Image (cartoon, rainbow, N blue to C red):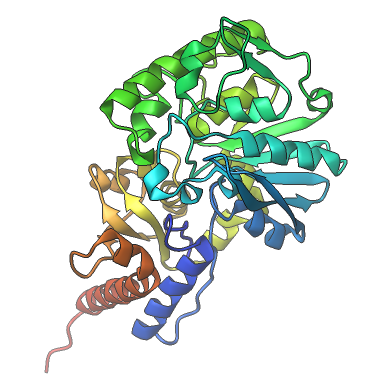
Length: 382
């Protein structure tokens, strides 16, 4: 069982438990290896702390809408793991306040500073499940950079304000950043600007209408230009470089102060020995909230299927919804896929009953697998 979490419904661990419950109803004697996976989003710090024998450090920081929120980062083996979703995630933005033109990553910068306060000089920033589209501007402000308009005034929070950015004053930027190794675990397919820029691809999911999507696209393009001129090392492509659009552009903001943007699974799956555990399986079951065209572009089911296919292991994917292009996961190694909802239900009910629906769907799917295996046997005729 190698699922991701189902956003705003189940953590990866809860999803794995639900799938196991359903499968054991259909095949009580099965041996099940539970391997909940994180992609840098919700639950990353907690999962890595548990896997690597680390610990969580609890703090209060600025949330995405500006109010203080309880949050945390992990410490393990000389590395701090800062999970951006724990302080600027979409789940921390009340539905009535989902305005990605105004939300901020300020708390991410506060957590990075808090991690540096512990003495570590290696920080892993997990990107995913963000509720922001500010290009990492808030994080840089928390770390001491001043973002100034043409009149020398500090910009307010949010990505929409970046269209008024005139220059960046980095004289008070935390000097410890220059001495630290900052690694950003991100989806390399997410870029900051252009036709597939983060505002256009993910802005609507965070509450942006068509007009705001275009406003944010323009603002982030301007942000990339000022970052490159005033702050970033020479030669870095902040507009279309791999991972620059991670978490609403946080990748670009951190890259401008020397962070390295790395494919998230290259960083995160080192801790769980995924390939060896896949090799022992007869069937792999993965899951996520929505199976669609994005699933094959840096999402957990796509990565699990790609690795399982190389080993010749069949893969079943379960999803809260089946979106446009869901069938394309077949090309990367998913052999069968299914939605988990038994009937049309409202979103609040679907989120609240996610565990129940996922367990039932897993049972239904495995019963179909078992039926097919019996039909494949040579018939014995009298």
